Structure formats: structure tokens, C-alpha cells
Image 1 (spheres, one colour):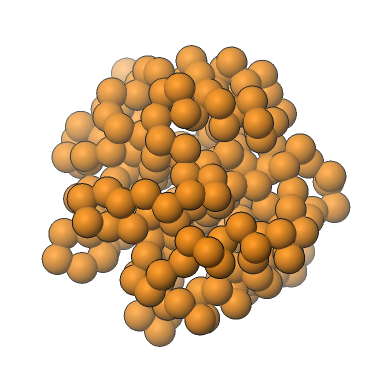
Image 2 (cartoon, rainbow, N blue to C red):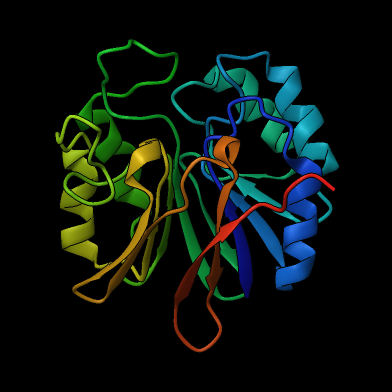
Length: 214
């Protein structure tokens, strides 16, 4: 199974570029890690998702109006927020939004609520599909501070997922393997970034760039 990973679209129309990249890479589906819109409107998320030509698995981000964007995801794909879905034998465990920020964005959760939402879904070897990263991994902002979720880190340490996908921190784009878990932040799609996750015979991730304008 091969997924094209997008995050932090923020209302930038990258659908055609994403479709082209997915075809070039032989992707089977899209995973979208949130911030599809830039504080709305939710209808834009529906228009964007409806143009993607492969199955879509997605969570909303902290800049998405959560209930409205979740409704649009359900209308055009599979909503993973607070859910676990089996895809070709792989358990995808999802959570959107973020831990609290200084910006008071539309979809933030307290650490206790993040843990309460995720813990019942967790299993060893899962693929975590998140907007917010775990504390200390792919979460460093330009000031040098680590701003990821402590609750997510606790669950990662306890359950040892195969893969942790997260966005949210645009400048923390990267791939890291630690203690048998592959951590991937694809970077912001609005800046032309994406990633490929290949789960055939293990787990491998590759950083990609969306194609330029013809």
C-alpha cells in the first residue's frame, strides 16, 4: 500500500499537482494531515477533496473549523479523527486538531483530552495519522522550542506504532526513525511539499515536491 501524504494546505489549490504526483508515484490513496483550509470556509475543503481521484483518509487541523470540515471529509473520503480504520491490513489511528497553542486556533485540545481520545484506539504497530506531532519529534519551531503533544509522546512510547504521521509545524519537515517507529512530517503542501509512505514489506518514507506549473 502506497500513500501520498499532504498536510497544511491552508486553502492553497494544489489538487491537480497532488493528483499528478500521485500518478507519477503509483500511489493507492491520499492521507491528509489537516489544515486543509485556512480558518475556513469548510465548503472549500469539500471542493478540494472532491477533486482528488484516489481514496482519501484525512483529519482536520487546528486551523480548520472542526465540525464543518469533518463533515466535508466524511462526504468525500474517510474521516479518521477519533477513529481507527483498517486499510489493506494496516490499522490507521487518527486524531486531528492540536494541543494548545498561543494563537487560540479553532481546533485545539487539552493534553488530557488528546490522550482520552487516542488511548482507546491504540494498538501496537498502528499507523498514527495526526495533525499535531509528539513532543520532541518533528515539532521544533523557528525559535528552537519543541511544541508537540506530551500525550501523543506518552502513547507512542507505550504502544510503539510502526509509523507516526504529523504536520502542523511547517518548519519541522523531516523523516526520523527511532526505536522502530518511523516519524514523518511531510511539510506544508501550500509550500509545495509532500511525502510518500510505502507500507509494502515494511515502512519507508520519501520526501517529495509537488510538480511546478506547466
